[in-house]
Length: 531
Image 1: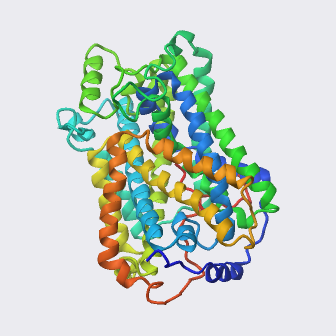
Image 2: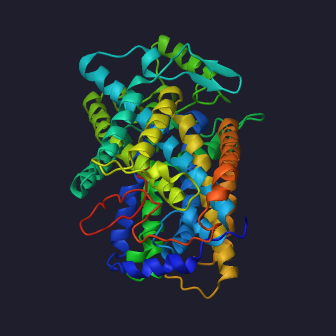
């Protein structure tokens, strides 16, 4: 079963038929990456990162950005070699074999679906905050938040079900089922809204910096207090990784890039550097304006203990940044820029549903290609006769996303999503090295520089972040993987096209999410999830 490898020559033969025109230069690639990366993560994870690391979350952004950069350089080599299917699933299938490819694809299903749930919860927080600011109306906590979770149990005293998150998840699912696709102009407009909203936040908050709010800088240390997991600066970096994942938009654009060996690294490193600086300025503005200390040391966000502490603080007339469900809007309202806080909330309400749509679409593409390869029932990819969309798999995905969004807090959802993402990027880092040894003469439009240094750093970096996730998030991956192996051996192993000697590569298939629109005219973005 480890010898089942999808022939790379067949995939490359298909790629040659596409003959995409190489038009993207370094500036276009960099702006493309900025548009794909900046978005959901910084809007919804700032509070959770502050609870884990305090002001030290500024270092967390740097660490997460660095791991993304080295992973992106590995990703780019495979993306340029296998441009037909822009995902770690196909890369792994073509290099390491079917079993590990199945595990990567199974992890990507988890990544996309749970990430969509996280964005739905983030949208819910901003929607309820904007609704309260404009009308004074707010849903009771039982209907606007899910329960608090920890290994010791579930606490329903602070919330039962997140109704707004269910609404947006199912609404986007319905739109995707009936075939709604974002236009290029509209998506570019949403990118501009996000960038302008964050720029306004920086301009308004940086003049209010108070140096005392930065001390202590690392209240939970670098790796969290003894006996805890997923806390500290590195623990926050593992969560913040969610905010950078759109970098693969640049990686998968390698086939359309002029002089990819020079321009892809410029685009990758440039966009990640710009976004890291952007994130650092946002974090500095939030910390400097109102502070970002944890409610207590060693306490995970989303747990019953954390919820109880936040409830007590709110009862005393305080609501620290770490307790807010709409962190950036909360900061501006706290410093008497209510109008600006409402604009941030409006920007989030407008932009985040499009990200949910892209993540749901990306997840259905993973289902598609796995079903195409015979690893999942092809019935899942049945196309509706009127809507011309895969309504069955889209509905299944949407219901799963809505259930997770209804019952889990955003920080825990992001951590679970990151566990799948980090595993996929770890496998890409290994696949690059394996292919260098197994097929050193294969044409590589982009070659990872000093690959025997970069790829091991990427692999170790992904492992470091994974093992600094909360224990619950770490456990989800092996449990989910175990379920996946059962499914594989009960169905996929027998039905696999490669295992049965059927090699069928379709020219128009793609594993990657729908193409996000670049932030400048003429730039084309084949990938990325705008996280």
